[in-house]
Length: 299
Image (tube, rainbow, N blue to C red; front, side):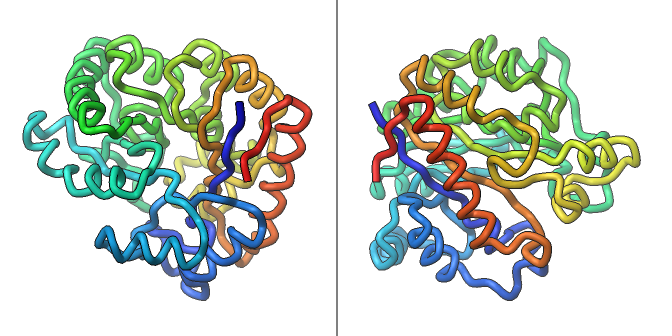
């Protein structure tokens, strides 16, 4: 049993806040990520859009596609319309042997609105989340039949943010809908990282190792700041630089025989957190905790 270590290029190329990463290129992101030791990268918006162009691009930098964000609209679309909307990405990810689609509901999220407090994110009742989960199961079954796992990314500012939201979504959906377990978003959302991982370990198909700085998170909550304000202020960081116990997380992944990707996703202002230095710090911390857990890293 082994895991693979990937990274999101968001530290070098932030799609939501492009101005703060204007001095960096996607090519630099892939080159430096591979130099550090990462063997996979999640898809970024500034990568080639066409499948063969993206394949050649990744091959040039000797790095695999280890997933990628999919902006979902299942709250407002019927299943057939949503299938049509995501089909190109599903086909592309199948062709490039990606491990999953990282799906999140974006029809009413506030995560990209710098003037809307993250505290004002949309919320659904338990029954509404259960119904949403049932609808997503249809989409996930369709993806699975095509050969692409669908993993749901709980995310700050969205309808699935808190531990309760995650629990309700998993309860209301079938096993075809997998979980992209994100440590940082879960803790920022007030959830118990280990309780959630232990409860839904059999549904976890993809893992984001994201750390947080609790003082900044507390300030964002107390002063009604937006999600993007939180990013700029440094709420997120790489594993080992915040407060999350990644040794405990790695021990749990070992116990549940997890063998997928562990992906560093830590958007920060590069003026405060140089991408190479912090990405290297995160990689070395993952190496350390995986070794102590007995998780072999595939290189």
